[in-house]
Image 1: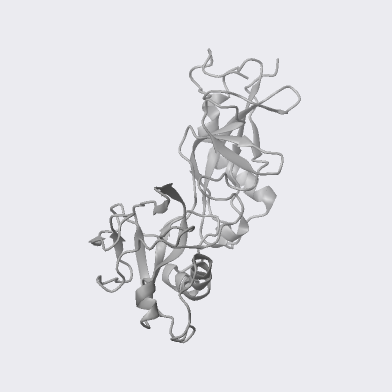
Image 2: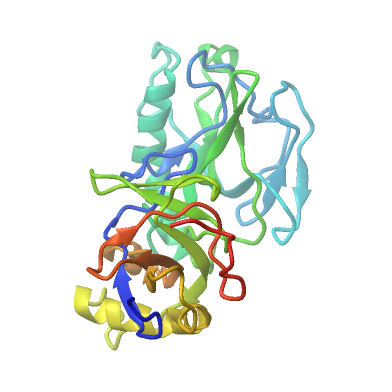
Length: 304
């Protein structure tokens, strides 16, 4: 029997953050409301509202010609305005209305550069926020309207009635840690292609999240080496992992872990990571489990 009182810890072998509605690979830093398949325009009317930089907005989704509320950024909202932008120099009067993929390119090339000055640091390409824009409708574009409003949204969306719905978030992006973290009790299954999937805990999985930890900065502010990152993450996650170490899980040992903060994310100011726990056998091999692990109940809430 392998004792579970020895603190085994390892960075997740899966470096890519687990996807929710997104690929585990680096997603594009731009998104825009609408239906990717039909280009349905569910954005609020660009010119009926006063989009002020640094202010936050929400509106009913999956509908056209909707009212927009200017709300405190501390309240749930959909969009944080960064500033207006005139695309006319790049898109003359005879330019056709952009497709969804072309709007993505427009956002990356034209709105993307506005984000770093606004935030004071780059957008974390693996974080929870993305650059976006409020665009004119096709009728406005064909009439010569080339003005957009650039802003920030929560990275991730869900599909309802064939339309992509933005997620609400609270708090200003400016000054926030951009880390995409997972609430305790979220379970992950590792794949052979060095990715991992978020799965219900009643399905077979390898690890589950047990909390979030904030790592201290490095001396020069730059990304730590892999070895130094592991040291920082192990120390930061220890309080979350420790309660699991005093228990035996059917002969398996508890092993703590964490999600990697990539160098690009570190340079964008991200310092938070998701701490995880899983089980390993006597050979140190990951054990698949079904059901949630608990530091206070090892009598049948899981099977290994």
